[in-house]
Image (cartoon, rainbow, N blue to C red; front, side, top):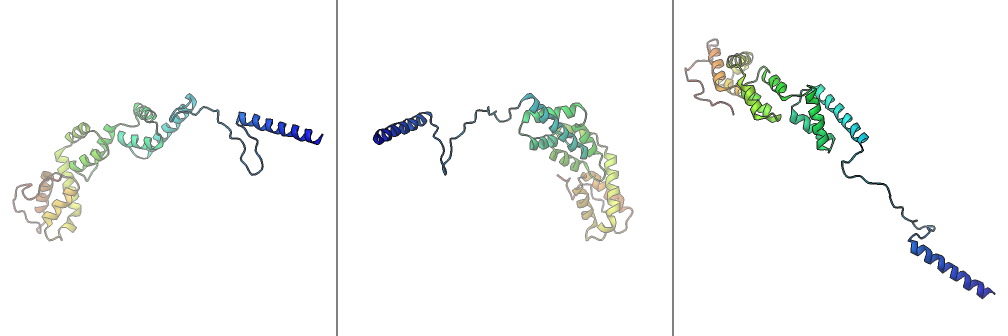
Length: 220
């Protein structure tokens, strides 16, 4: 009787083991990992969203764009760069950029006008700044064409008047004055006009009568 019972138990045990083996789902025991659970949920592709999720992402990015523009006027290139730091969805970034432009919160023409109206800087500095900020060359040329040469010359003279006390102590005041105004982006013609004007006021700044730009080229 014991032999029959033992044989029957062995057959049952082997049957159970075979059944679990076919299903590929062996029961866990102490110290061993249980069956792995398969994820049946749908995994979306990178950037894919439900309409509700995309709308929320758009609203969040639009709010960020308004915050960015509230602190400082940004060029299109600058705002695009900031938006792409917040999202990998380029289409969404372009959509938000177009929306803020449509609402009038961003335009490169306004940025160029503001940069062009700054006092104490010449046309060369304006060009460099607008180019660095990503403004298109055509708009830069249009902006600079609107500059008044007389106003730029007066601006250079006013700047030189404020700095002259320190420049006059230099070994070569004329050269120092030229270098100072050139670093501020003024053209050679405006620089020499300002220097010659100052030469008539200051005894220690002799006017040699040299032609404007003869010794010093326009700044690049």
